[in-house]
Structures are given as C-alpha cells and as structure tokens.
Length: 162
Picture: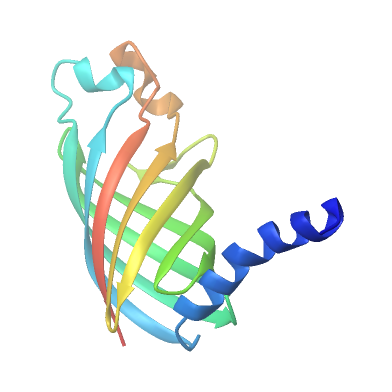
C-alpha cells in the first residue's frame, strides 16, 4: 500500500466512527442545569464563591455531523449577590459523542464584560438528554478589583432537548 493510501485510510477511520455514531440532526429547544466551578485566581478572593448553578435555555440545529447551538444562561447570585446572564453560541462536530467550541459574553450588575469568553465543550447525547462538560477561558475586568480578573471556569451540565 502506498504511503498516501495509508494516510487517507488513517484519516477515514475517525470519520467512519463519527458517521456511525451520529444521530439525526434536528432543530429543537433545550432546558437544563449548569454547574460552574471557577478555577482562575479570583476563586481565592474574599467574598467570591467559586461555584454556582445556572439555568440553561437553548436552540439547536444541525447540518449532518455539524451542529450549532444558541444558548442563554441565567446564574442567580453569581458574585456578591448579583445575577448574571450569558448569551453563548457553539459549533459542534459529532453525534452521540460530540465536541466543539463556542463564544459568549457575560452581563452582571448592568454591565457587559469587556471581552467575550471562549469555550471548549464535549458531551454525550442520550436520546433527549445531553450531558456535557466545558472549559471557559474568561477574564472580567469588572471583577479585577478583587486582585484578579481571571475567572476561567470548568463547567458540567445536563440539558433535556425536545
């Protein structure tokens, strides 16, 4: 077998696996819960609770193995008694097992973040249940007076999709 054929065969194996695990891509809504655990330096600031629970609302649609999701998250009592709202958008590849990247921005205390956050997300879809984890790369200047603006976050979520 020629080297080029070997390379093409090696590249085709993951695509066949992804195709065999893909579910029908359909548009739909989702509702769920999201646990956030702040890993950045700000977690050590006095008065800042490093964990929070959020509520999710999403709209998903797909094109075969490529899927997109528009999501809004509401986190009550995120920091110092203030609620947070975060609109987000993601693009995924896969079906039953999927992974992808996203972007979002937070709004707290009548102020938008100065910069958006970026996220990597992976998960597993069981029929109507989507279970996932993500890592957010996030800085927030408005919270910088606590000695740090690093609010990188590891999250775990579950969403029912219908």
